[in-house]
Image (cartoon, rainbow, N blue to C red; front, side):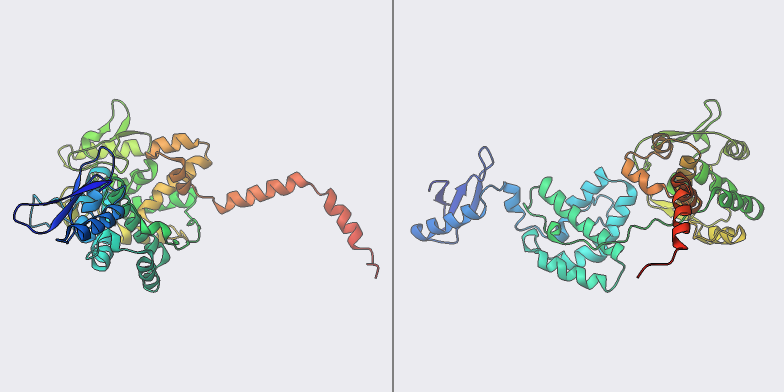
Length: 392
């Protein structure tokens, strides 16, 4: 043969073909399923043409199912690290991304496509699944699930060489209206924090730190008393054993009033506490990062809603919205984009633009300035002409 050779193994009548799919690559040995040399040669030519240009792992990928590739680790087995895709996520993605992919893999990918190999997943199959899901959940949820599917095929193609094709790229993604949520104004946030200090003083330090420090809720949970450095006047967000910030980098947040006095007071009252920000009740919060139940603060949904009603804030408020408020209000008060990005620990202007919202009053003032630049000369001329009778 031009690109391979045929041979028999001792004691076996079946003929095998040996070929190299790429120059310098490892040879591949496959059975032709034939015992006649002429018929085996014809079958071998088809096999070589089918795997032309592929690596040995891509040939191996013909027999690996998506369920095996994306298998999640079993909790009962401490040494079980899961499938290759899950191991890749653990090594290269933040904890929030892993949590989101974990739910998609468990509820959608494995039940719907886990029994199939990569070559068996066609765009038509994905499109039918997408149409079905659009009738069940919101479009944004389907888009997140398709992004997870695309990541699975991308890793299988680029890293492990199990396939050469990503069928998700041929699927039209559901469009989502790009509307930013309205956020509270600076005055409304001030009233919100005042209400927290009056009605829930045990959670006032948490809300103040989330807003003034621009922290994520998980970063606030893992703050320790030692992270408050009064000598350098900074609050240190650090990578810790079993946990790291979303961007996986350390960063310092300036300790300024009133956050400085509040956090130093907490540190002085509870110097031996494990976590800096206290929880009001004795309930435990299961932390996936720590792998156990801890005395972390929860998501505080009900508390935030109650305080927002007391402060008469018309929009829906969440703990993460306080981080968006930090970005928007800082920009309004003169901070540059890169200063806010450094404070929030953001690495791209694209992400930063999602965190910066336009307040309605600012839009009104911008429209007013534009109208003032036009002047009233045209208006006077138009009013004088509008009073004249219109000729037929």
